[in-house]
Image 1 (cartoon, rainbow, N blue to C red):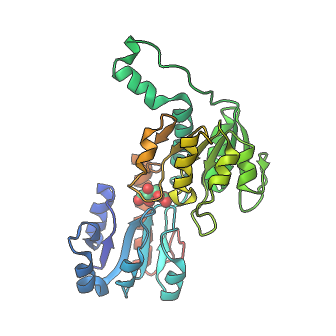
Image 2: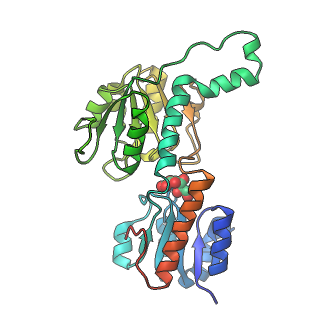
Image 3: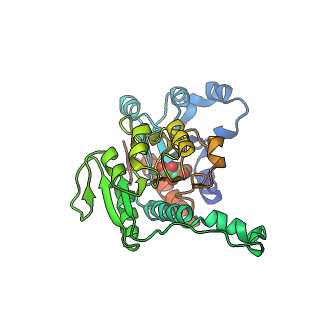
Length: 311
Ligand code: 8YV
């Protein structure tokens, strides 16, 4: 009998095939009765493969008493209880670095799409509206003031790309960095001093709903919110209200509080651009993430150090 692992979400076919060659893989996300499966098989499971947006739900973790490793196919580990991992002694790995460029690219894509109305432009041509008239004007991307919340790997990659747009860049982060960008010591100050507020920080207890009504107020009626981090950083109710009242000028979002459920109120706004959490979703990056997931699992079951450990 090969080592038993559970898979908590769909993965690219190549990774699923390679996992199946090494392990007995239980696709828990497809199980009709998850609780029954866990009650019967949970004790045999030694590993979990999961997405960053899913992590290890507490009820599943509790049903896996002999769990040794949670391999996250993603950089975010906010949905795995690391205190519990340390207490129980299971390892956690993630896939940092390999997705940085893609997430930064998507942030720029959202900035461009929202400002230059690319989804509307595409619709304008496809639906024959152009024959009836022009679609109207959009907003300049170059030379604006961009505020980045979180200047880690992804935040820095976003800043580097923005430099190419002659942007004026400022940031707020846990620690002041040795960079040429202006530093603000609070997200309110950052929002008040930028035209586009880009969220690129990790989800933690401290950053939950950090983009609240006050921050949106500070961002102001011309200001745009962009989020490629986690939905939990934004108070979505306050965001919908700010968009309804014209408190902010627009939003471009790849992540949401309760994915894949997106507040329907957002669908009505022409100044909002939406994406279904696709920051790392390119063929190239998902392959690189798959390689890291496999490398971490292989290392663990061979008794070696993990290549990219979180715990
Ligand atoms: C993925 C992510 O959507 O890296 C993360 O933390 O949320 C994304 O890369 C997801 O983890 C894919 O499984």
